[in-house]
Length: 310
Image 1 (cartoon, rainbow, N blue to C red):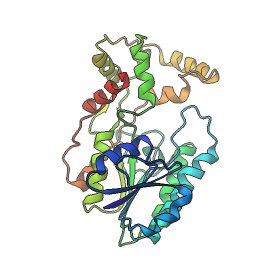
Image 2: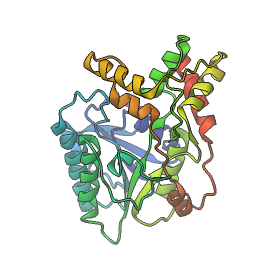
Image 3: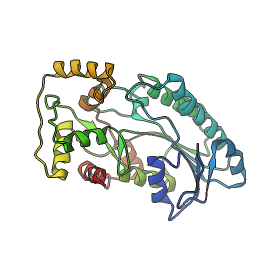
Image 4: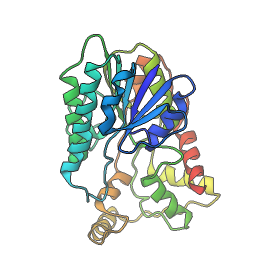
């Protein structure tokens, strides 16, 4: 297949490129357009018109503005990138010969907090903040026009991780590696994660298998608590886990001070590290005829943790 990937130079784009380049012809679209191994050509967004001569079969739209946990980004920038770029590439798709469009949204487009045991695709979206709001706006503009002769997939992954990724897992790893005690042991939370290996496998199957157009959550099969994650990091490092059960009220006060002083621990990051956020992946597995994801959550996280050392 001839596949166009937007945001191809990012973490997910680079991994999808590795997964697909052996069996497909890949083209890239990004804010910069240097050559990339396994990619025939990469274009900048203002060169989109040059793709009209290429018979594209599928578009994977990854380009977007990530969630800023420090809340320093202007709200308008999320809509300019996450919503309006989606409008641009989706309108191009509708006019092209491509038959498949995969849009990378986020579980945050559906809910900032999970009410009940699991987040499913049936939840009525109630995003909080410009990141989730810009993503649901992009989803809605796609759903306004879903041609019967094309396949439209909206993928909502939870936190994606893997070698080369930067985010809260790196922060957690650095704290544990320094031998600092983990003070959030009093929180008994569970969270879903998405291994990049599971994600790339699902994307490849979406391209080659017949599945209905629609919205699909993406996550690993198992959810882990932050305490379990700390223990897993210590296991990889060969250290004994130092988990302290400091009062949640005291930790929240400390996070407020941290936010005011622009320290790593702020209320938003504290919530992310301690809230329950379990995502159902049943719908995507059923659509692809899978009983389970090929990589379990522990295996995927161990691979990511080991990559931090190098």
